[in-house]
Amino acid sequence: MDQNVRDAKQLRSRAANRAALRGAIAAYLIYLGVSLIVDLVRGKSTDRPYLIWAAAIVFVLGGLGFAWYTWTRWKIDAREAEGPSETEEEK
Image (cartoon, rainbow, N blue to C red; front, side, top):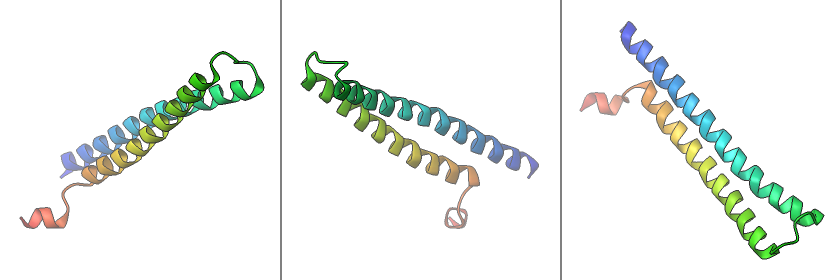
């Protein structure tokens, strides 16, 4: 029993660490996209504005998508760390 508790704590810790790293990556992608847009609006970047807009949109949408994946993956990992559900134990 003590080993199971330790394993569950390790799994929860690992899930939290992975979620934090993925969250940081998602936040950085969103930051890159927003900073491209801000630079374009302020006039710092005037070369090929459509390309910059496209890249900014790709970064922001990619960051949001990765953030969504991070959230759903963290929920799945946290549920798995809790152990098998009652319906799985009955089988």
